[in-house]
Image 1 (cartoon, rainbow, N blue to C red):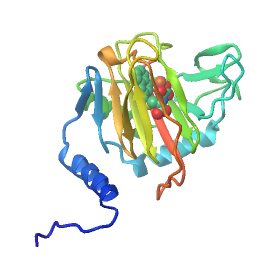
Image 2 (tube, rainbow, N blue to C red; image 1 turned 90 degrees about the horizontal axis):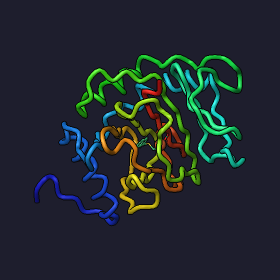
Image 3 (cartoon, rainbow, N blue to C red; image 1 turned 180 degrees about the vertical axis):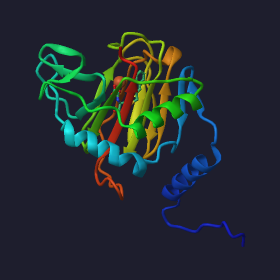
Amino acid sequence: MSSNTIFFKNSHVLARAVRYAIAMTLLKEPVCLMPGMWYLPGFAQSREIWPAIRQVIAAAPLRHMQTQRGFKMSVAMTNCGDVGWTSDRRGYRYSAVDPETDQPWPELPAALRSLANSAAAAAGFDDYEPDACLINQYKPGAQMGAHQDRNERSFDYPIVSASLGIPARFFIQGEQKGGKSQSIDLHDGDVLVFGGEARCHFHGVRKLKQATHPQFGSVRWNLTFRVAQ
Ligand code: MD3
Ligand code: FE
């Protein structure tokens, strides 16, 4: 019997883990999943960037922002960088100050800047210098409806997204809202880069299922790096 034989009752679950491990160890190159959308499985080391995230949320606490229609978002958010994404009854926009404190957002920590820069470079975008990083915290039940990110001054720069903690199903449509969705489950460390024609596609996150991550517990974090100004 070969040394890599596996007998296990839940072999379908295990097979998924093994497939993922193989992808992580063999994929040295980013994968293009659709024009402009690059998948870098396991690119981010969540343990290495966690201190930077903790430092940001200590200075600018997570909050559930309101939509223009007055609904509370199920995702808790904060920002770091020169500007931060905020939403309230007046609408959404980038702001140089945290509206909760009227103080500037915390600086973009070097560990986060370097993650965004190296992920963008791996996907073929050189000299990526984000000026904003939105930090999203999802707990089971949280979701993000289909939307476009169009508040940035230019769409010439990619958006880099890093996921930490428990998995979530990300979906992406096209230029039209409600078009056919394509989905991918994002796991701890997975990075996506959206440039070119994927930059303005509608996208969102399905309702988060209960799960536990050994480091983060029942939480998912998502960092989105943007060139906003
Ligand atoms: C495709 N965040 O913060 S990350 C967002 O997982 C957002 O928290 C989701 O959508 C999350 O705006 C998805 C992937 C993502 C982010 C921005 C994009 C995909 C994108 C912008 C344009 C196209
Ligand atoms: Fe988005």
